[in-house]
Amino acid sequence: MADKRIHIDKAEPLLLFGFNDIYLRRIEAAFPETQITARGNEVILRGQDRAISRIERILDELIILLNRNGNLTERDVDTVLALFQNGSGTPHQSTEASAATHTILFTPSGGSVKAKTANQIRLVDAARQNDIVFAIGPAGTGKTYTAVALAVAALKSRQVKRIVLCRPAVEAGERLGFLPGDLRDKVDPYLRPLYDALEDMLPRDKLNGFMEQNTVEIVPLAYMRGRTLNSAFVILDEAQNATTSQMKMFLTRLGANSRSIVTGDVTQTDLPPKEMSGLVQAEEILGKIQGIDFVYFDQSDVVRHRLVKDIINAYSSRSQDAGS
Image (tube, rainbow, N blue to C red):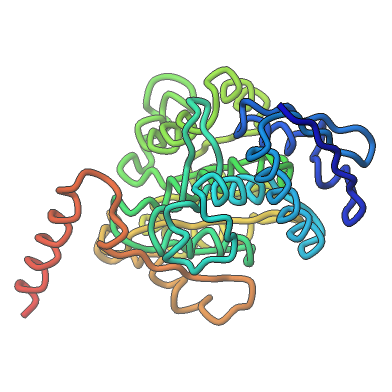
């Protein structure tokens, strides 16, 4: 075992270490045989020489990121850790080359949520650079899961104070009020995929606490009307089932320091035949606005069961044959 003191003089230690040294604890968890202690503007490392050397390089990279961006996020720390843990030690990679190591957050089970495909990474990058991002593509491509992971990472790193997730409950229509139970009982069948994603990424007790305090809120789209959401990460899922007026209503809910991701598949709308999808129209209306970006997914991004990609291709071919 070796000891080493690192004097931090090129960055603000409080920003580098994180609130309550959360970033140092993240690094320490990745190197379980190493002890990391912060004292003022010094970091004291105790462990094997090789691990200490890698932690030094990680801290150097985080200092570069901190000085370039003005702050660090938990996602920054996780991404740098993943790169060095995979042995590359080269943080600046192309989108395709870094797909396997682009970590968004770590899960309660000890695993991680990573952007696994080129378009998932494009979604992550677009969400960093824009306040509103549309993720459009077929089922199984990880649009919703990646969006929820980004929201949870933003909450954990204190970039936002709350998460609001919503979906149109198209099949229920006006009958929601007549279903038994409270609001959650009525809309659970339509919002279940969002719960599933959150339960993968947060401990159950913490998620329940967040939901009781409305730090994490899952609501049907219709219940968003009249609200202003400040310091929030807001996701609209299955947006192809939102009407034009609903889409406009949703997008104008954003308040100060808020961000939004809208996901959907324009080929699977459940709206009545005469009702135009708000997602389709958003592509036409908002495409040139600065601060809004569109990321398109395709069959190559499918990350579910290996047969899902074949199923999508088969149905796509059948539709093309029917149209010819």
